[in-house]
Length: 202
Image (cartoon, one colour):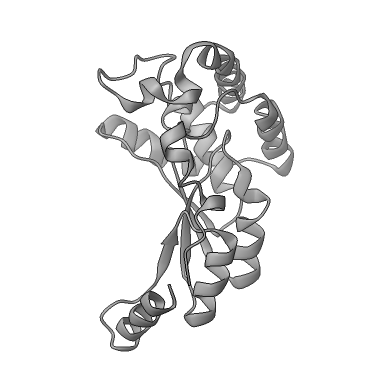
């Protein structure tokens, strides 16, 4: 890791790259990498139903001045209606994802319904409200929703127009308690790469 960071530092100094970022990095890895050269941002999964990084990564990043790029901000499409208002695409890997499977999915549907009810209150769609919630977590948090449809892209952009008060943000947080999310964040194969287990060797 030190050697890799050293090489990236050289590239910055030579003007060949401008910034250095990490993805799914452990707290220890972030600290060690940042000591070699300032890290600009860390890409982590972060959404209404995946909030573990609030306990460790986000406080550290704020202490060090590192931005957070939130991937899967709609919970792999769940808060966009996947498997609820629209079927999962044929052959989709989400079909075997713990949170989209069997009894877990049936229980998680209640979370979507709660968010949809709040979205109606705010005059927006559930995915727009989920993205707005992330945008209100701080100026250092930037969600990167993925889509293959232009209409979804345009709708996602409109989430910046959804204004929330601190009370609104708390209400949204409270209706999607992580303790009620059913199923692991990743399947068994991918779970070993989860950031808390991904401490890069020095």
